[in-house]
Figure 1: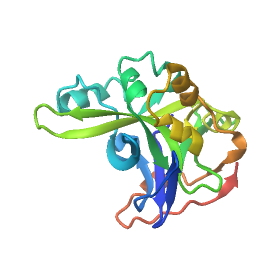
Figure 2: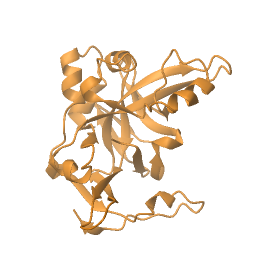
Figure 3: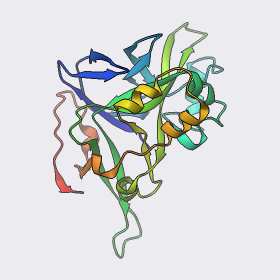
Figure 4: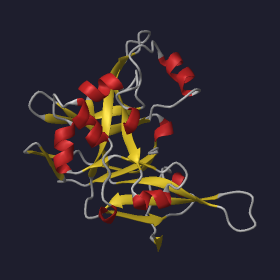
Length: 242
């Protein structure tokens, strides 16, 4: 699954989608857990263009009435990710997948490999940082849903990251569930946010797997989740390259 993301966009970084080039907003977020239920930068299509927006990471169904119901729902399941194979079968995800597709920006994401040492009764989890070679920023397929808290009147866009079956590299890292976020190249990303895609096109893009050789991965410190300390200091140590 994809529950931990990172972003590092330096001033002047640009992306091109559907022949339109734009400068990205500057941001540096070494790590964010989806379970913080915070905001993240997404790319939303407009009528003939696209824009950047901070959206709430956790797709909230339109029939959820208030924040209390949101929190109660989290006790049963989370909507940080949307499984590609069931995207159009889900009551929650179908309409966003058909009508409200977005791109989630990333510089790298985190997953765990589980091994059970000989003689041990418990697995040991080793965290990895995975990124796309020579791409400081890349695109994850996402879907979004506008939501209004009927009690407070708060309005916001909410989103999920689409996940697919792991490719060969990610099978070795995420060796329990064998999933990975759906990573799209520029051409695929442009198509993903285009209107009027057929259901077949949506499923093909949602389930696509980036080639192994385009990814790089390495282990990181086990206490990396303390990265968001008040000083904001963090580094990605290259330990035993995968």
